[in-house]
Length: 242
Image 1 (cartoon, rainbow, N blue to C red):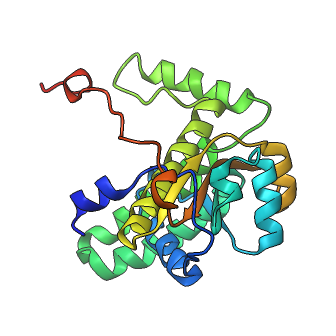
Image 2: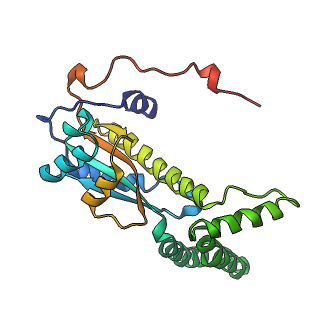
C-alpha cells in the first residue's frame, strides 16, 4: 500500500478475530519505527509496554473497562510518558550530540555548537522539566512573562504545560506506530477509557510515569470490527490558508 492507502485502511477497530493471531516480532518492529516520531527537543520521554501473554492481556483489558477492543485484542501496547526520566534522556541526547557535532559539523563551528548543546541539554532542559509541587513551574511562567515583555517567548512552561508536551510527543509515537501497523495489514484502536491507577499497578509503573494511551492490536473480525463508514468533519471547516 502507498501512504494514502495505508491511512484509509487504518480504522479504530473495536472487535478482533482471535483466530487470526498477529506476529509479535512485527509489532515490535512497528514500535521501533514509532521511535522515529518527532518529540519535543528530541527528549523522547516515552516508553512502550507490549502486552502479549493471555494472563496480562486479561488484566489490562479489565483495567480498560473490558471494552471489546481490548477483550478481543491479540496484543496490546501501552504508551507511557516518562517525565521522571528527563535528566537521563537529556544526558543521553547531549552525549550523542557531542559526537554528532564532531562527526558532521565544520571544525570551526564545533566548539560553539557543543557549548550550545551543553547549555540546552545540560541546564535548560533539566530546568524546564523540573517539578516541585508547581512552584518551579510558576517560576518558569514568571520568567517567561518577563522575557516576553521584550521579545517573543514560549510561555506555556508551567508544570502542567510541560506534562501536556510530554503527552503530545508520546501521542506522535503512538500515531506513527498505528500507521506502521496498518502498513503490515494489522489493525489498531487507541483508547483513553481506562483506570490509570489500576493500569499503573498492573504494569508496575513508577510514580512519575503516566499512561498516555492504550492501543489494542489485532486483525478486524469481518464487518464487526468497524462501525460502518468513517465520519469526518468537512475539510472546509477545519482548513484555513493564509
